[in-house]
Image 1 (cartoon, rainbow, N blue to C red):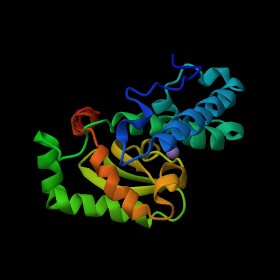
Image 2: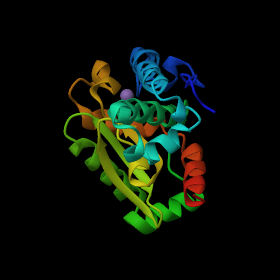
Image 3: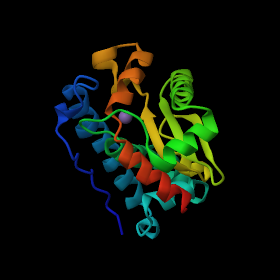
Image 4: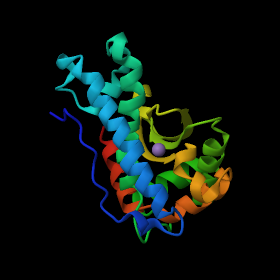
Length: 206
Ligand code: MN3
């Protein structure tokens, strides 16, 4: 049982992603935003003890079956909890470079090249009006790139997230202000591709 959910610890220092993502942004993003999603998810589930034995993946995958009085809270805060947990793990100090192995082959087969794949993620993430996420997902048959609004998770579509990039302004405004494309370009330099590759294998295995 995961309930009550706990704010996952970062496995690196707030300044570890400098200069791409600044320490103050990381501190607020993890310590305030992710903490708030965690607390609000717990508060929502307090009202429904029968859901407290479910994983967050199960809650999001079955979001339409969550009782209506807490469905929006679980959608937003459960999504926020799970999305950020992944986000911290797919980044890290000394990141960047290119995917390797099976993931690299699958990306090349699906999108033509690694460069075309990056363009596609950047376009989806830049094109998301307002707040949301850009994703690479395993849709059960292959890889797909798209964006979701707010804290919506690919799990709500029955898809497995392989990587995701947060394009809420809180993720980049201190350093990049309104320049979301500049943030996205820099973000690729933080990617922990071995973790993304591990998630790809896990997603394919269902
Ligand atoms: Mn965020």
